[in-house]
Image (cartoon, rainbow, N blue to C red; front, side):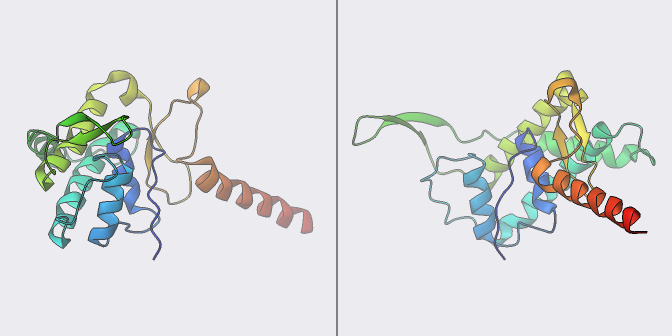
Length: 196
């Protein structure tokens, strides 16, 4: 299975949620390494050989807690309302995961004299989870971003995104993916009606 991470939801934590659609994307340590690097949690040349299969459940757990917090914020009128106990458990876990210090960046000079970003040390699982958990805290405590959270209007698409479009009228997580599917479906319905 080819894995191409998506980073069009407007926040790192929402991009982690995108790894569930259209199917589970974090199935191997290699996929998780690719997501960590592509998400810029670490500089591109950071060795991530220490990312093993036991990291996958921790990132999936974090993703589940993020979903439990952002879906109600993106669809406040949706029914049924979120279970307050489950919401509080997710909030407590996000806060707990956000505590460890994320990897500290530093500027280093390359052989050509250009400054580039490097880490003081290779980050462990807790530090990388903390980066995503802190992004969740930032999103949920930013009233403007939180008010701009939207659930994708695409059929069976669970993705949530920050709507930064003009007039805040964006309907889909991606115009090229869900938006295109909707346009094709609309065209097929019109064609079927005209044939009938």
